[in-house]
Amino acid sequence: MIGLELSLGQAQRGYPDPQPLAAFFQQGTGQHVALAEGANGGLSIWTELSENHAAWMQLDNNDPSTRLSWRETLVMELRNIYPVGDFVLSSGWSQLQSSGSGLSGSYTGNRAVSTSSATATAAVTVDRATSYDVWVHYTSRTSGGYVRVDIDGTQALVNEIGDPTSLGFKAFPTYSETDLQRRQSIKVASGLTGSHDITISNGGVATPGGNAIMIEAVAITATLADPRILPPLWQPGVTYVMGDEVQFGGLYYSARADGVSGTDGPTHSGGIASDGALDWRADDRPTYPKFVAIDYASEREYAMHFTSGGAATELGGQTHGNEILQGRSVLLDGTAWTPTATGNGLTVGGQISIVEDLTWRLQTGADIGTCKLTRNVTPGVVAHSVDAIGTGPEVSFEWFYAGMLPMVRWDGESRSVVVDAVSAPNALPVLLSDYAGVNPPNVDFAEAQRIGLTADLDQGTMTYGHEAGALPGVGNVVSAFDAFLRPNLNASTASGGLDWQAKAYITGDAPGGLRFGNGDMLRFFSRHVMRMD
Image (cartoon, rainbow, N blue to C red; front, side):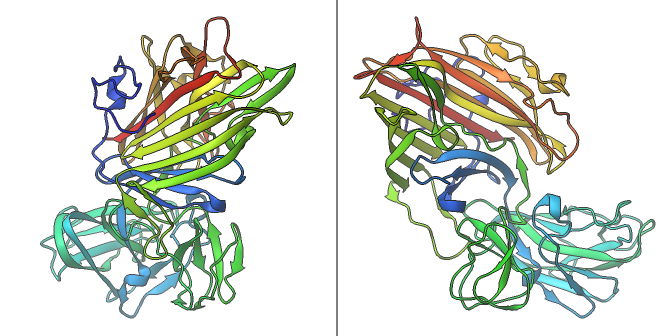
């Protein structure tokens, strides 16, 4: 059974000794994991990949009778967000609200303030015990002017921007050739500690440009343990202002008017509906932090196709089905987890353990075995162990995926290239760009149990290692493994609003073919290691 992260060079709990590709399996510097409610009865799992970066993994549970399925991973830089609602505004500001919080439907975030006044100021107090940097989130405009930033009434601590055109003070321009570009941010200070007052004002006319500025938020460095990385949980009987963002039941909502919330939280998953007193717009992501999708909605745990008595069955989670959930436990640092009712919705710790007891079943309804799936999450690492025992008729496998790694070459929402190269032992790296516009044959990696990929994000470089293999046990029927890559599932190109999807598989087999019957064991692991540099 897999439970703990391994240091390189160790072989414990059934893991093989590290082989080539070891660099992809080095842990990052993150310290925390976190749990939160997911949409439709699912789970949100957060794990730090470095000190200030995290992956957000969404575990679907649209069918509560089967197991949780890891369906999407988003990567973000963690920042404590101070939105417009926290600002002290002088006269001269106009308040705005956008139509959506996702990148594809928004240019300002849920609330923003705009001014052309030379005397308007917006102030907010930020605070953190350990060292932090400061960003200003804004919107570029064809009429964008300069934004001046002061800290504690002076510019002595404003050390990340300068005087752009001999203005006589430090500022940054917000001009763009295209009006209303989607969210922008700029680092204005670094190395602060404790409490500081940030003041934003209009720095004057930019040429080209104008004298209008639009501000969305101020942010400072954060980890998962910081309180302001996500919007607060919705609360009953609270006065909200149009554009205020909250979360409830694993979804995110922004108020569509000024008013007092009802007694029951919003439950709709799309569009606009009421909580009984106030209307809310639903979204599956918050406005902040800024996310990049490194994969797409496709399962990772395992999947298989087998026959029995001439009848075919596919098995595996939400997608393939035929797994019946018998029981589930969710532990955080060894204690049963329950959703929090306050704060930002996250319960933070060092290790998550999810155990699900399942019955495997033929398409015809006959049971063929019992299975225990154990999922352990530590900072930057997601490990699965699967222990199945045959209880019914023998089945013959046509294919068996012990581990799966979906990826996106091009993220259509952020309009950026993500995954560039995929590596396997004893093979040259595969460049996904070589397969633009075509759906090629599979790229095979014989006898490979490890795959590594690199992702180039605007926040840095991410490395991702994935491996799968047999766990020891008398009567374990799986013993041989190979891997293959599908480098372009839909003949996509690195352009437009659609993702370029690819997927790697680690397959299991046995000499003479893989079979599983009464009294047999099928024991294997899969492991995902993510790091930001």
